[in-house]
Length: 145
Image (tube, rainbow, N blue to C red):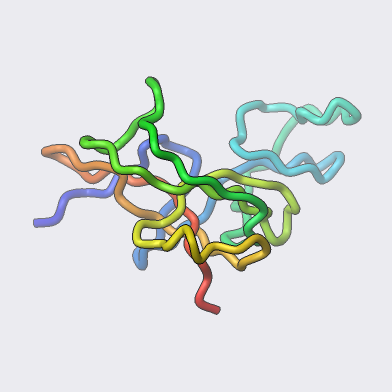
């Protein structure tokens, strides 16, 4: 029997059966601004007096805006695999929202082959496993189409 897959941080993304997913954010109906993560119940745009945010699913595609190679385990409270495995981090500009979202790069991606402006796709992968469940996180993968 397979273990249930559970997000490392609840409410930031959802996972589809095929391993893809969507980020969960907020949109201000007053100014049209998007926010990720959705941390507040009001608009964080200082030029807007919006008092609520709508729950929205954000784009699952975007373009590679920046990236780097991470060789050190993140400090608490951020989770990391044990033993720590180096990984790349990508800043991806979401296609529709035109905002940049950070995330790890999917396992098996050759960082030397990454290029600014590349089309990226959101995927969901295991971060670590416990006796009872598989904890998952969103990552960015080079899009195949």
